[in-house]
Length: 355
Image (cartoon, rainbow, N blue to C red; front, side):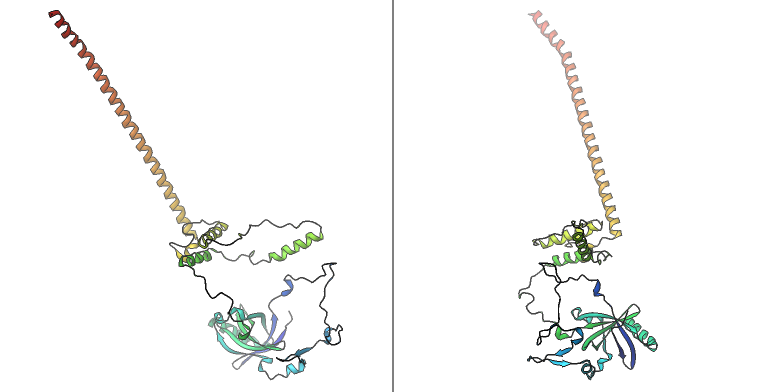
């Protein structure tokens, strides 16, 4: 890589010569060119002089500054900019060391890797990097880059120092008018359910940070060149429409997140009872406990069925015994009746004979 700028870091009385390298590569991002829709011809940005009306070459383009409240443009050369009485023109002076969380992410701009520009800078470079890493602090300073002064943050990343260009505080717009005056209110149970949903998200995978948009765009281009229909892998359809029941949507989201990772849904998916914000994540231990619970429930069900069967058997036995007892009693009554019948006839006959 070729450095884009060279300067020194001033750390108290210590000076560290460094070279700045672009930390990001915008050439791999998706970019489009403008075309004439009628015939597909390229539409180019051609630099034209507003006074002469003629196209000019890049070598003829310079810098100019337009003061506020006027239409006059003042030309400025590279020598004019180099003559600016700014200590930041060639030196990044660290003004303070703060916690990284104190920097508003809205202020963060382009990033640069800072390399060593002199063999003598190796030791102070390593000293500054290690001190910031152990102290958990980042350095704040100012530096003039590409003709303008800017805030900058220096932080350690592995074995390298990284410089992040920061916007000035006045470049961050006010929040006025972004939201309506009357704010929406959420219930504590809804907040707990949202926290459970946050906990149910897994770690980022390699596929999550892959540029699928670029691949899909390249497939469309290839299909057009081959005069065929583009082929895309089937994916899950994302739910659309207005959310009516927020709590139900949160609970369904938790279940869907767990199902996508092959985890058990468990109880309290909405986070409204029990574990609160941290109850959404299913661990190996939890799964084992749930399996044990299910096994115990199955055993209890089997025991209940056996008890019902045993009770039914006892009832049938009692009914059978009662039936036999009734039959025995009926037979005994018949026998007694038969024995009593001849005696009656004898008494009746003797009476008739007497008459």
